[in-house]
Length: 427
Image (cartoon, rainbow, N blue to C red):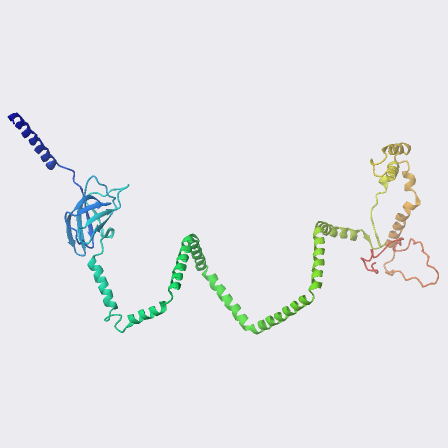
């Protein structure tokens, strides 16, 4: 090997040594230092791992007791982000291995934990130690042993009684557990309705509390009613007894007259159906009947026992051609219109009016009625209210013409009782 080759090897080794020294001694950014307080730190030492999701992200630098707590100081790599509200737990992978500090949860977003942060005891957790489990079991066994609960044989009797009660009830216990599971499942499926019911009950109780005075008054009134019913319990008992007898008689009556009642109910059904079918007509009758009766009362003339109406006989008589045409052909413009035109040409309008008005038959009634009214006004106040009854005679009765001094006018066909609606002695 020549000197040139040796020089090259030496130079390469020197470069490697310089690079290693630079890596070891080159300044690097410091990690994030965090302190955490635990209730215990069994199996945790300086140099123990600090992990996130099982991946090592730092190490413990100091473990120091602080009275009832243990303060653990550890560093996290600067390129690892930890949530500002992260929790710390001491994890034991097995019974004999070293333990490490687990930070959780993993960072996703939000603020990060800064250098010098502290995780309080409320956000830390430690595993249960095996010696504590053993000690707890030992304390339980001592408490249940012959020096404890079973000192007088109480535990033995409880176990013996339980064994006798549960013997042969395995199927029942299984069914009970199954039913309980179904009940829990039903409550779980209907939790919305259950919560809504509880909410409504809360609203109801709040309403009762808000209206406490009214509720108390209601209770007082109910108490008074109860006292009154208690004082009248004999009468109430007698009434209920009589009601029972009446119901029994009604039941017997219905049973004995079932056929007749069926027929009556059937006829009543037909009657009500007919009335229902004519309800519009009945409604119209009930609406118009009061007006008709009022008009009847106003049109009735007690002096003559007649219904007075105002007949417009001058209208048709003023056009005799139109009157004859309507009598021969029917309503106007519904029959022979040619005949109407011919009659109107032969009989001029108003041609027969003077003679018709002067006919004796058309003027007799108004003249007699006018004379009777005038006589009634001039009659003395001491005149008897009613006319004397005619003397009995075997001769046939003959109608007498009313005189001008009569207070009333007797008209043929007049009915003073309006068909029996008024009494016969109506003046």
